[in-house]
Image (cartoon, rainbow, N blue to C red; front, side, top):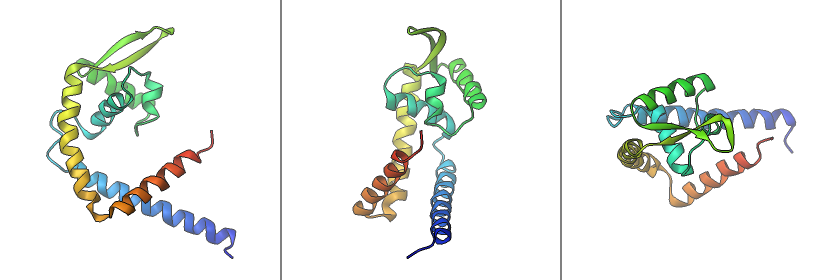
Length: 148
């Protein structure tokens, strides 16, 4: 039987391993020469909008990206100025604003996404298909167990 102290230590070791892998792989991906039209963080915002397939409020985008609300707001301002995103009124709440991807933003997301997808595929070759399925299952289990 394991003690609570052992369980906490093991949980922290597993978390540290997960975060170290994420940080190192993200650094490797960030060093690739594919980020000319959009930085990794900008791409993350574009990808989130494409993945959801609809206009979103900033607070909803923030749930899927690793940016603070002020940083996300400034980034959206820059992406709107560059023509990659468009703001529009929320028809359900006159005080709120929705953000959607423009045609140019979708083009940039597709082009950068193709190259980024290849880089991810190459990095993930370290795992077998069964291990990739298990990794997906485990991370989805962690997300499902989040307290509300």
